[in-house]
Length: 112
Ligand SMILES: [Zn+2]
Image 1 (cartoon, rainbow, N blue to C red):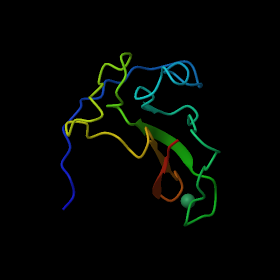
Image 2 (image 1 turned 180 degrees about the vertical axis):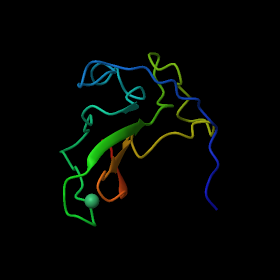
Image 3 (image 1 turned 90 degrees about the vertical axis):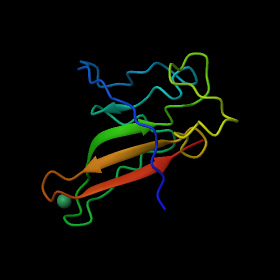
Image 4 (image 1 turned 90 degrees about the horizontal axis):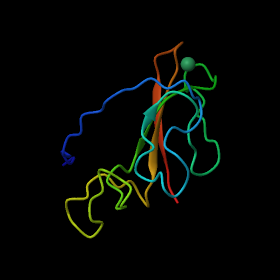
């Protein structure tokens, strides 16, 4: 059975920067969720190739482990508590890609 996670409303705010909008490691852990710009890769660049047309896919979003326990994170949840649901691996991030030519999507995970 898939889990049904608690909901978070996402507020979108335009940013003129194409770089990270959440500060620097490790203060930004849990707060790196965003749309567009460049991916904030935790490991190496793993931009996927579209399985239909074999071109590099466009970066759409990254979803952070938003409940990472930290005094700086407004959505911090005690890491030992079962209430901490948004933890992808070890403070990992899910990256979402899209091919504007084919309509294909792919996501991948990186962590520490
Ligand atoms: Zn494609």
